[in-house]
Length: 499
Image 1 (cartoon, rainbow, N blue to C red):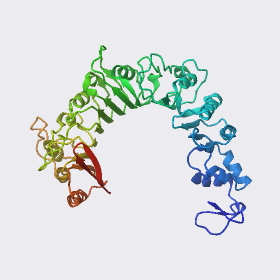
Image 2 (tube, rainbow, N blue to C red):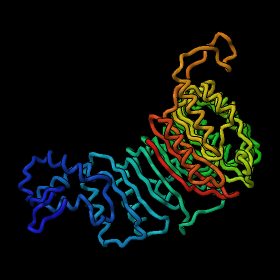
Image 3 (cartoon, rainbow, N blue to C red):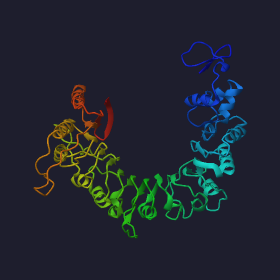
Image 4 (cartoon, rainbow, N blue to C red):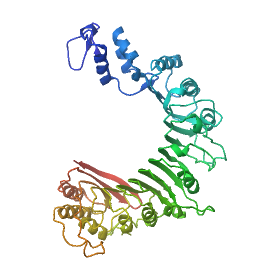
């Protein structure tokens, strides 16, 4: 929408200038049209192309529709208040905009900040919480530990009756991230227990971690938790999850020590359906992996960080999956740290050789998987590929992300599996343990994400693999990438997508 020189409006590609009175629509029709233009939250400070302001300046009737539509003023985003040039009346402008939402809808407010100290941002946060705590439905902000205690601590006087979700990032007063372990009792959020009865989703980012005595959140009623950027000791993690009676979606970062004096007992999290675990050096102590029970878990993401280990041990995954007792449909296994040697690739002529990971027990404990993502560095051994191709392993798998050196072993597996899926069911399964159990025909794969981790393949060889992948004609397409390995260095030099 643009203004014409004579004061009219040009809509889209229409070249004829129209005056506002020519569009004599009822207010509700104008509102529906404006809904197509006004997208996203109110941004403060306002950008030059702010849609609300442009529409409100056309005429008094349009301005009345814009300013009286409550949900246009229920979501706010304060952007980089410590860096951009700020108008002197920013606080007054925020007051005017917030008042337009009246008292009928909850407010959704996000403070985006680089983490640097800002008097303006602090004043704005104080104003929002002091004046609108009773109407906040969602709040996201960056605060110091002092501000965290002031606004949300056990002794704060603010009540948040409508607050359902909070996203907090904690920084030091100077804007830097602390590296010391927080002292006992440095962060106490027990005030949320009584003053935020609707709170169900908490995202907390404290990069220097938390002390076991900290937080004291209302764990027993939370349904979503994201502590993925807050390192938590294994014993603290176990104490937290023991209280998560209604958790459905959880993200945790667990930092393992070499030994713990505490003992762990089995813990059941009955309702969790999605779980993401970032495991920092889990090889130090694997005791918790046999103590977790999640009978409703369907999606599991395991992100592992080790130091200087080139050969990944799958034992901890086997233990975890064997005891979860979960109807898993999706598993992601990500191994992030690079090995100290190049002994992690299969031997092709003069390339280094591979120590394949043992995945038999991992797949056996996740028999009903429909989606499997193995991030680069986790390779499927030839015997496993044969079982997946025949349907003896992962018979319901539909989507696969995996890495290979040549790529042809994966292409063969997908081709053979999809051919096997068209054959009639017959014969006993090799893993069934009974001659009376017929082999189940596997579900065909419909999507493939293939990463070639090779050494010096020329463009022609890469193109041949890509052509072979495309010839599979997968219904949901494919993603093909080539990562060239130089000793301990890796670079992505070829990307192609097919759908």
